[in-house]
Structure formats: C-alpha cells, structure tokens
Amino acid sequence: MMSNHTAVSEIVLVGFPGLADAFHGLVSTIMFFAYMISLTTNGTVVFLVTFNENLHQPMYLFIANLATSNLLFDTVTLPKLIARYWFGASTIPLRMCFFQIFLVHYFGSMDSFLLMLMAADRYVAICHPLRYTSIITDKVVTVSCGICWTILSPSINTAVTVLASQIPLCGPNKVNSLFCGYSAFAALACTNISGPRKVVLVLAMVVLLVPLGLILVSYVKIIVAISISARSESLRRAFSTCMTHLLVIAFYFAPRIFMYIVSNIPFVTIKPDVGALLLYLYSFVPHMANPIIHFLRTKEIKQTLRWALQGSKFREKD
Image (tube, rainbow, N blue to C red; front, side):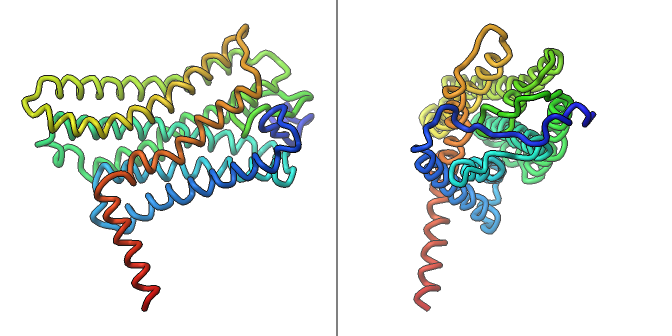
C-alpha cells in the first residue's frame, strides 16, 4: 500500500492559513502559554488525584482521566504547532503524520467517552443517591475507563488511521490545519475517496452522537428528578454544579459535529483560516478550562491544594 505514497514523503502543516510572518512570534508565544496552562492545570489534577487517597472517589477519578486525555492531546499537537511558528519547522514525516492522526482522534474519542461516563456518574449521584456507592464503585470506574482507553478508542481510531494510510497522494502535501487529522489529510487525495470518507464520518458520528445521546438522556432524567422531588432545593444545588459540565459538553460536541458534517458536504466549504481558528478554539481552550470547571472549583480540591501549598511552604522554611 505504501506505493500510493511514493510521491510524498513528508507533510507540511500550514497552521493558520494566511497568517502574516509578522505575527508568527506572537501566535507561537500565545500557544506556548496555552500549553503551559494546560500542562499546569491538568498536571495538577492528575497529581492531586493520584497522590491523595481522599480524592480516590469515582467523580475525581473520572475527572483525572479526562485531564490525562486533555494533557496528552495537547502534548502531541501543540509542541509541533509552536515549533512551526517559533522555528519555522513546518514539515512532518508522512509516517509521523499518520501517527498523529491516530493520537488526535484517539484522545478526542476519549474525551467523548469520558464526558459520557461523567454524565452517568452525575445521574446516579443525583437520581439514586442512596445506591450511589454500590453502583459507582472504584472497580466500576477502573473497568469502564479501562475499556475506553484500551478497547473502544484504539479500535475505532486504528480503523480511521488505516483508512488515512490508503489515501493516494500525488502532489500537494500541504495540510491546511493545525495538526494532522483525517479530514484535513483527506483533502490531499488525488482520487475519489468518497467511500472511505463516508466510513470515517459514520465512525465519527458513533463516537460523538452515541455518547451525546446518553448524556442528554442522563440530564433529562436529572431535570425530571429535580422537578418532582420533595428535596428540590438540595437537588437544585447539586444540579447547579452540573450546569458548567453541560457548557463543556456543548462546547465539545456542537462544533465537532458541525465541522464533521460540513466537511463532508461537497457544495459547502469553510474558509481555511476560519476552520483553523475554530479548530484551535474548540480543541485547546476547553483543555485549559476543564480542570477549573470540573475540579479546582470544588471544596475538597481547594482544601487539598491549600494543604499541598502550605506543606511546601513549611518544607521551604525548614
């Protein structure tokens, strides 16, 4: 199959199309700080949950998995993007592009599955509080997250990557995107690949719509439970913590579904610079905000973080 790729051995990542050279330093600096923020916030989440036994609770374990996925996604994309504008290193070997396609879609799928699991966790906590500890156990969390990490996401995105590797490239090797993803890479095809495109679209819709459907069902049941419960005031307070989750869910699913559908409609096109900006906003901005929205705003985490900082200060004095 590699004979299809003899004409192209490396890919050029365009990044933000049309961006003037004068802004390359500014853009790379902004992305560098975005990566540092993601690294710090998500790393803090993973560190606190891993090394504090008090946080070994289902909700925090789910959030730690999400933080890990976000951090790894940013690590396989942002450093190369920063180097593209900071040092002019815009090329990437074809095989590494395929590897990035796999990882980008792998961690993107993980976010979708983990948001679904978090919604299920909130549903049980609010609608079946007395049974919560017996239903959502550490073992259930470990098994469900493990299935997503080792079976669901790898199997789906191996198929996506294999389909990408079959795309014949005959000339142009410039990917109008911030990183190697299937849709941007498929635009380089020199023959009709409508069949593989449809397969990838179906896989993408499965990854996006199935979790989204289950999330919506969970939150509809939560709203119904709140509206008919005698403990409506306490449940409303519990649901208020879910509202920020819903915002993250909407910001994750809505633009991805829109972009996947639009990119597969022949007569509809999005300007490359607009597409790149949207891709940046919905891919990286939530990764900086998620730890604050899901984790650092909770009382237990604030207390744990305060103890950790106070402990480090005491050690410095000693």
